[in-house]
Length: 361
Image 1 (cartoon, one colour):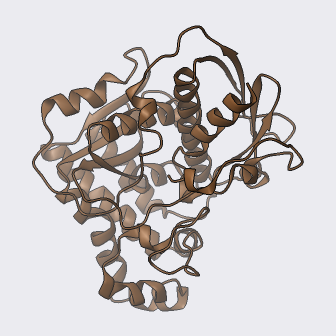
Image 2 (image 1 turned 90 degrees about the vertical axis):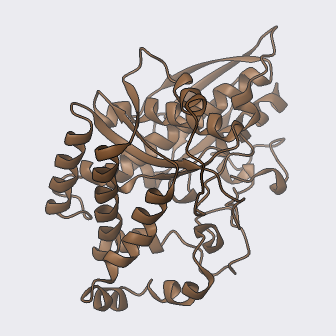
């Protein structure tokens, strides 16, 4: 059982996370795993970071459920998103089952990754789109919308505006560049934060991009509209070029639905991976619309633009993430994960280790 718990935990760690930083630490028992909030997440008060964290937690729990079934176990999950440092975010009771379920989604856990390359055609076949929808629970409040025609044009405009704002506003600019490991060469991976090579920035633009981490320089260049050009390249262009553009939304409260949405999105991502498709999530245009007035980040004008725009596209739904799908070459660099011991709440626990080579996200 100890080995099984270890393997289930590895599946969770390989789930996607905002800026390659998980919001939990692990506690192992004889037949359970608990996920405790990090201090940073427990004390976070910025709405979009909170929802991104819960969304990521949903993906982590989904990976652990799928992995457990693959290892011949049943899992009962209890969730408490209250973020108290005195209570776990989630508790997983693990019991051995007589049936080991082969699962194509679980088989894709180790190969799933964010691919920021430009995608190429042909257009997605209906069987591929149906495959993404097939992993959703019809009774769930989570919805998958394929953005086509006018809805795609409107979404592209919102994506461009939101991605541009990330370089126009100081707090959002710091959020981006603080998560990039500029101490690493462009050919190296990283176990935490983002290796620069994973961003797929064109070789001639790399020196300039590195300079843009200076806020005074960025602010000066913005006087000439630099943020619009960067937003065009970072958001509009790759989404415009992608054969498929999708939106994950919920009919309920964004905060209450974030964990379930993260689980559903992870199943779709794993399904896309099994079909040989590349995926890149772009959360800014959906998630910045959910900021509160007191949050540092998106301007009031951007929030109003995003809220109005998304209601035209998906009335009575709350968008949580946009993602593009297509075919692409393998990423230049894949972000990794820290060793399993890094994620342990009690660093003195023995018998829990994993080779670093197994941890690639």
